[in-house]
Image (cartoon, rainbow, N blue to C red; front, top):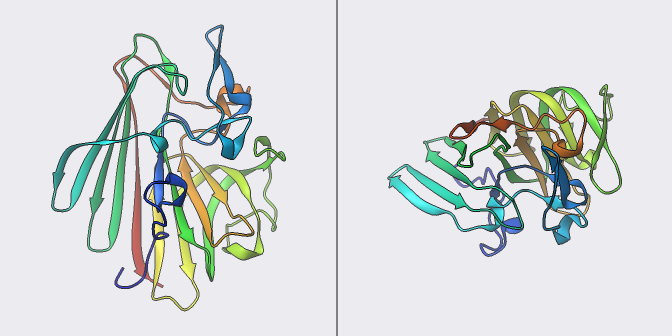
Length: 255
């Protein structure tokens, strides 16, 4: 907004981890040991170095998306996925990215093009500058995490884990899931003209605040981390021909 970056500027357009954001499709975060069972069969995925031995973030963040349509203020991208070692079933995903005078809106969709009910969802992984940043949002539960980044169990929030009244990013170090968040978050930066409001119908959010980096992440996501391996997993199940849809809006507002 003006001269103020609302998302982290891209560092290296060849590396999704150094971009301003990337898509999370057909699942978000980690799948433990890069394996899961579905309808009585075991499926094995490719683990990723950044999360080994787990699989992470789906396939859309490392694949080429093609342009379906565009206008002066929007573009619609698509990814047609076939079965492979990163995800065993086909799907068709779309991102419509719309830019307004003070906003960025993402409309996300993934369609099951297989002939059976399948797990699939669509979330997003944006990066933000952590210098002087604070984050505020409400959520029903906090999930503690194991040393390898997998959620352990839902817990009541404490003053140390809650962002309900706002928290300075550099006062905490998290890589945790917040369950059933309110769908509205706010980021403010000290001595900057604009704050950022984030609205989404995605049910959960991941907060990642690494101690030795100049960024943090607030990620609206469609399911609990490692949902496919949890008794309380809430992975969306999509019928053949049906779609999972979600939207996220980032809006710059006066601080």
